[in-house]
Length: 407
Image 1 (cartoon, rainbow, N blue to C red):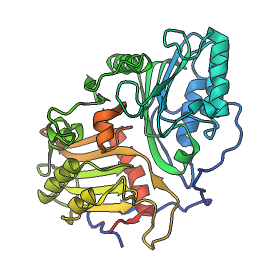
Image 2: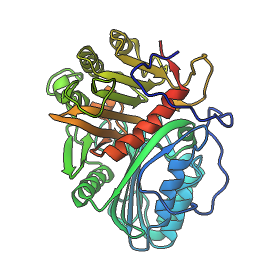
Image 3: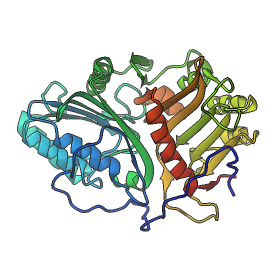
Image 4: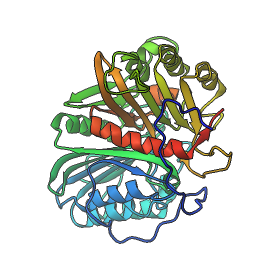
């Protein structure tokens, strides 16, 4: 049984249909059903795999003529049956649809997808060109990153108007493709935060115009939100330099004691929860180990993947019993769940930046990998809300209740 003495256990929801590796199929859709949900949205690959995709498509369907939809994605194709049809409908009714996609060794020919090609043809018919970022609508393909030099790994949406809401930012961990319905993912949307929206828009414009900058890193704070934009260059010859590692910097703000209400055990020690697809940065692992040695409790949900969760990281995390790591693809009996981890988020419940009993969410496209830090186009969003934290925590508990021990 999992080492979960410091966690409140929950009853796992019953698993539904068997999920194929290529991702669950979905019925054809002519329009996204229902009103979109603001705030946190999670998919459950066993019971509700398309929750995020449907919600984002519903948002697109609420964009009125003349508004602007700006979208930057690592992957978008027709295996997600919701987004591309919604973008076609938006373009037809007069929305300015601006799309930036990755074209790289992992995505060598995005336009080979019939749905994306059809959308690009519609853009050409509407504005006379496809890849011109100065047109009202466009589809820009970035080769080996837009700002960075490896991948445009973003999963972000911005709507100037969406229904009655203005300046909407959606930060997701999911690509617009079927395989991500087979995986755990999360998204979060917020409206009306002018500074936050403006920075996401300026970042998008830099992506679309492919303004290469290996040290693009910048942040913006707007109320309870702080956004981080990558890539971030190292200050030394080492790509692993912890002084310019954003996640290390976040963890350096954590203190394990001093809480009165929140955290783990009767002593209210700070609790850290991490859901992560790729975790290769040993300096991040060392910071987690140091916090565990000081009494913090740490839960990690990851994939049993030697490339993206290597022994160099595992061997560090194994050194302290306050760190628990679960394999989301296996249950406690060793059977395949078929549900892999694709989310990227960090939850802190406890003492952060000198403030006791904090509840924070950090989430986005940013894996704990060197590429995510140094080479990719990535975004990471801090949300300082106890309500949102608890929503993410509940989803995390559902994941951990299904998963089995990594070791």
